[in-house]
Each structure stands twice: as structure tokens, then as C-alpha cells.
Length: 407
Ligand code: ADP
Image (tube, rainbow, N blue to C red; front, side):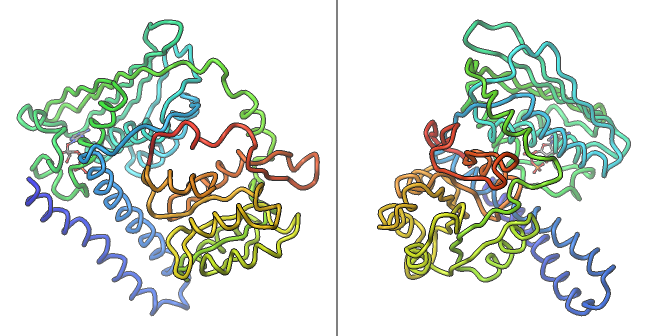
């Protein structure tokens, strides 16, 4: 199956890659035609995301297969998590003219201790398949039900149901095997790697849960996942009030000053544009040595936070962080440092933590994710003080504390 997989994979990777290269070439001739440029940029973005998804799946699967995947447990608001999934899937379903509904039944415990990224991954994999394998005009439904358990644990049943093309009995036996896809005319033109379901099953197993599926060709599919999580008795209400205090249309990043290290020129440009689009400013240095030298002269109020690439020439981000933390400049002890790296695996996260970094952002930097992370370090809200202050030890503690790993 690996040989089949490799040949499928080369095709799957080539398709978006060819699109990216082809579209870029077209765009060079359209510099004075904004409408065409906008249309092509959109396609470029879709292809980039597709490629990233494929690459992430391959990396994730190889991690899982080598037994290196563990969970990253933190405080999780289940309904908030479901809300995030809902907004992404609603958008996808809307584009395909499908009806998507989320129903929650008897959810008594909203705050639990769990790995939100992994729960997200399970639900997104199943739901995005429903979107992919359900024709336009079809119906998709996510139902979340809390089942009776005890005072310490909450148990939930997640049901994803669609009225799409369905699967044969023969294929259902192998659906959770890596690299398999059902060969039928309806799916041949649908992009995929055959890894999503295998990853989903492994993650459900890792969480001690159960996944099952019922389906018939032409009659849709029904996936059921049952998971249990410890109840979070000290639910993070403070965090919620913090979340609510920023005006909805102003980014939390607005007015923030970032000191950054990033060696890749294109990535630097993108980072700068993203931060500036949110009203933040930044100074970017191309290697660890230069940011360390610059930091020596930093005065209170110059910067709120450091964004540190990890792999860089001259001095890497880990060494630069160690030097900043032990620097003679006392701000080195308190300024939050976030790692920005393409390697988002457990060992990398531990290495960053040991070096003195507070958090880990995977690249390409997702600005919404950065906003979420930044919120944890804010110790004074911008409304009262005019300007926020950011500090390493702001509550709640960095998820690193409870981490055993995550993507
Ligand atoms: P892929 O990347 O191909 O979607 P997955 O592992 O996520 O890989 O799914 C494996 C295969 O299972 C798909 O190629 C498809 O044939 C089948 N499948 C998964 N979910 C559904 C669904 N909701 N309806 C019909 N077929 C599905």
C-alpha cells in the first residue's frame, strides 16, 4: 500500500504545486489587472492550503506510525471548540451549497481537560470528508451529546451524518487503514490522500475513545465517536472575561510592538505585512546573533514580545533565546518569547521550552492563532491603561506546563 500511496502522493502534491507555479507565472503578466490578480491570488491561496494540508497529513501519519504522538492536555471549552469547527465547516458547506447543522444535546459540562487541537482534528477530518463526499445540495449534521458518566469525567458522543455518496461494505473494512481510498468514479476527482481517516482513528485511540462508521453506497454515512475527558472544575472564567473585553473590531495585536528573528526574506515580508495589517509594528532581524545584539539595547516599552524563528544561520533561535534569557538586560527575564517554526513536534516544543521560550507557533504563522496566544500574556487590558502590558507569567500558565505533545 505504500507504493500505491507514493504514486498517489506524488500526484496529489504535484497538482497544487503545478497550480502554484502556473498561477504565479500568469500573475506576472497581470500586474495591471487587479481583478484578474485577485482571482488568481484566491486560487493561489487555496492551492497553498491544500498543499500544506497534504504535507501536514504525511508528517502527522509518520509521527503516529512511529509512536511519537502524545496528547497535549489543557483547559478546553468544548462548546467554544465546536463553535470553531462549525464556522470552518459552515463556510466549506456553504461553498458547496450544502446544508450544515450543529445540534448539541444535554451538554452539562462545557469545561474539560483535553487536547483541543486533536479534538479539532478528529471532527474536522470527519466533517470535511462529509463535505467532500456529499454532492451539492446535500445535508450534513454534527450532533454532540453528553452521556452520563461520573463526577470527575464527562463523556460525549459526536455523531457526523451526511446524505452523500456513501461507502461499500468492502471498503468500510479498510477505511481506517493508512493510504486507502475507495476507488469509484465519484471520488476520483476529489483531492485526498487516504490518510485522514487513519489519523483520525489513531487520535481517537490515543484519547482512549471509540470510533465507528455505518454507510451504504448512495445512502450517506454516519460516523460516531465517543470520548471521555476529565471535568475542569476550575473552569477558566477569568480567561473568558479577558476574551470579551477587547472591542470586537479591534485586533488585540493593534498597537503591539514585536521584535522578530526570521531568516527567510519572503517569510519576513509576510510576517511584517500580517502584523501591520493588524495595526502592530515589528523589527525583524535575519539571524539569532543580530536579534541578541539588538536586544541588549532594548529599553522598557520598546517591545511587547519576541517572535523567534528556530532554524536560522549564524545562531539559531534556541541559542538566541538562551542568550536573551540570561542577558544583562533585565527585560530578558520577562519578555514573552514565542517560537515560530515549521517543526511543530513534541521534541521541538520541549527544546524551545528548555531554551526559555513560552509558546510555540507553527509556520506559516496564523494571525488568529497569534492573537489567541498573545491574549494569554496580556496582564493589563488596553482599555484601562491605554496600552497593554505583556508578561511571561501571565495566567493561565503556558500550555507547555501540561504538555506531552501536539502539532
Ligand atoms: P481522503 O484524503 O481520501 O479523503 P480519508 O482517509 O479522509 O482520505 O478518507 C478515506 C476514504 O474514505 C475517502 O477517499 C473516501 O473514499 C472515503 N470516505 C471518507 N469519508 C466519507 C464520507 N463521509 N462519505 C463517503 N466516503 C467517505
